[in-house]
Length: 432
Image (tube, rainbow, N blue to C red):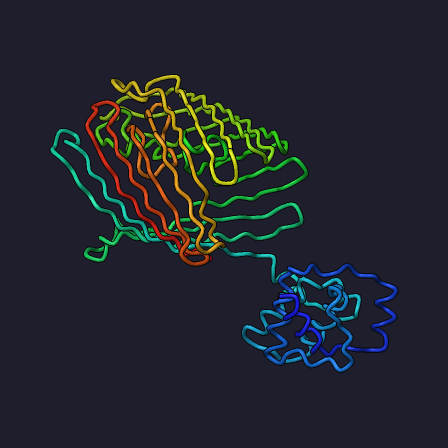
C-alpha cells in the first residue's frame, strides 16, 4: 500500500516558498503509514483533484508529515469538488484542521465537525424453528419464525471525554407480508445514552445495555446510570429500572402470577467486579436486585417483593484457538408459586472465532445450559431459553468481509415438566 500511496503523493502539487521555511520551524509528526488519509489522497489523485508534483519532493524512504499532508488538502479545498470527492476533502480538512489553520486556510465549523458523528449498523435475517413436546398440555407444537432487522447505531462526540450513543431497530416478521403487519412490524429506539470516558473511570446515563452478568441473568437494556472504576480489575455500580418483559417467564405463560399485563416497571440495582488482564484468565462476580411490583390476575391486590441474584463466572484461554467459560447464578426466591427454579448455570468450550473483517475466519462452540427462571430472567443464549435445560452447538463463518453467517442447534427439556424441545437457529448479518 505504501508504494501506491507514495506514487500518488509524488504526483501532488502544493509548493510555495513559505512552506519550506514553515516546515523547518514546525516539525510536525509523521502521518502513520496505515492512516486512512493516504487512501483518501490516493483516490483524490486518481480523480484528478490533486495535481502532479514536478520536483519529486516525496521519496519512498519516509512517511509524509501532517504539514505536508495539509498542503495537499489545501490545494484540494481550492477546487470545486462534488459528490464522493467533496466528502473526502471535507473529511481530510476536519482531520488536518489545525495544520490548515497554521497555513492560513480557514476550515468552516461544519467541516471541522464532519467526522464527529459516526454511524455503524447492520441488516440481519434470522430463522428459528422451535419444537416442543406437549407444550402446555396441548400436544406437540412446532413453529417457524423469519425475522428481518435493520439497525443503526450512531455515536456523536460532545467533547474529548463525552459521547452520545443510540441504537435504533426496525424489524419485521415475514408473516406480516400476508397480513396487516400491525403486530409484526416495529421501529423502536432501543437505547440512548451519554457516556463519559476518563482515565480508569467511565460513567453512562440513559437507556443502555446491562454490563453486569448480562450473559446469564438478563441481556436487556435498563434505564438509569452506571459507573465503572478500574482497568484490569473493574468494579461497576448500576441503578435504574427494567421492563417487566425482561422476565422471560412473563412471555412464556400468559396465565402466570404475576401476570405480565399487571406487572409494572421493575426497580433495579447491581454491583459487579470483573478481572481481565488481557491474558489467559478472566473472572467475574456480581449481585443484582430487582424490586418487583405486580397485581394478581384479577388486579384486586398489589404485591411487592425484592428478588436478588448472585452470580460468578470465569474463563480461560489455553491458546489462540481453545477457550473455556463457565458461569453460575442463584436467586434468593422463586419467581412464582410452584416454580422452584432458583438456580442457573452454563459452561462451554469454544474454538477459534469469526472475525467480521477477516474473510474466511470461523469459530465453533459447544455448551450446556441450565436456566432456572428465578436466576436467569432473560439470558443471552439463542437456542436454550429461560426455564429450560439443554445442549447448545454453534458455528459462525465469514464468507465475505463484514458478512457473518451463524447456525445453532439446541436440544433438551423443560426444567419443570422434563418435556423435550429442540431449536434450530440460523442468522446472516451484513455489517456496515
